[in-house]
Image 1 (cartoon, rainbow, N blue to C red):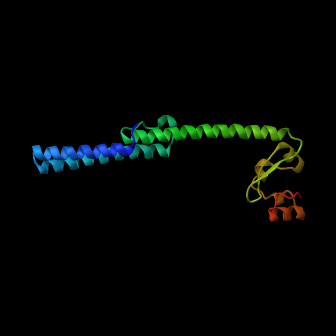
Image 2 (cartoon, rainbow, N blue to C red; image 1 turned 90 degrees about the horizontal axis):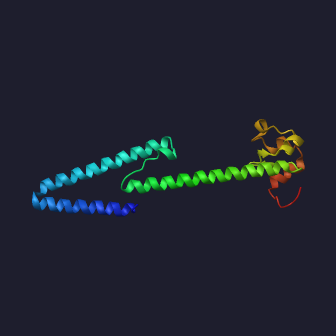
Length: 165
């Protein structure tokens, strides 16, 4: 895989030398027509690859990612590597979350995870049992929906979590 800038440089250098050669051997008008035709062809080839990329982006699948040629090979290769890295990271994150859930379910304490708006994002089995939390119904409900204690509400509003309640 070459750097796309080198591909572009060599393309234009070859175009220039072909133009110069044709203009000396035949005439300048034919050389200009040949140059325009080759630039139109290169534009069409790029449009085809852009269309293939756009089609793939509408339904991305690593198995259906185009191979590409020239500069497009480098682009598709980088996309392939990025998709594989993201897929691996997503799998690792899912494994870590599963391990966290198993560990938190083994605790005797109830754990409730809140989002930045103090809404219920998740609760372990113990918290669900202790506080009657229904994962489907109570998810994204404000925590004050479960705990109506004014001291607890003031604690959340102060946002000083290094202090105990």
